[in-house]
Image (cartoon, rainbow, N blue to C red; front, side):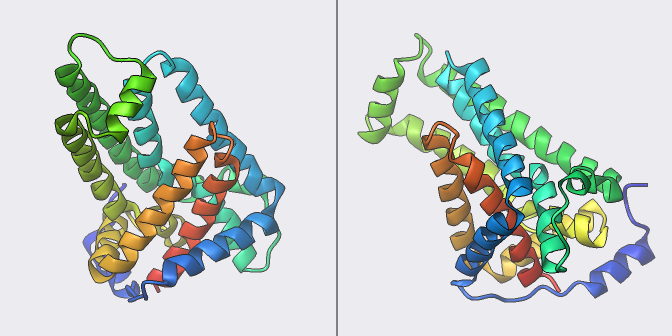
Length: 257
């Protein structure tokens, strides 16, 4: 079964203690993420290359439609917590003074596969709904055809189509906030303590509720890391994605005891 029984869930809840952290804590997690990247080296960069390849794949198949590219890129970010599970395993081993093991990190999801699969399904459904909503918004505002990419970018920068900007990015923010709130520590928690998906999501919501300021800082830092990766033609993801993944592990260890 995917769900834990009532006694099991209750026991797990009692064993989890959500910590309060300062506004500067996310910068410490980021620093620790940098350290793990350099300590894991090849294993960590392997995941970075995989993220970059996914970015290039998105661009290749949706290159003629930046509307689809934006939606796919957003979905990519929504699924990030699940895709980074191997990086959590590497950080876990480093924290235990064990050598990073790429081969084992590639199969670490097997230890709690049912709950991780359920959570991945939820995130995928949210990503698909957002992709569809994104396409509808573009169709409503650009029903005579999409402008050239340069014209579209200029319109965004100059706020020429403020209604589109507010609706598109506003709805996108709602989706991103929901996924962030249920996933900020969920996947590391399911990997580390083998908790069920519901307990992990509720714990994640509790973390956000207890640390709204720190979580806002953390979300901004994560968006900045991934944005840098996108703006460099996805090359930057080779480094920024592993850093974000490793740092997420340290965030989890700091926030949940």
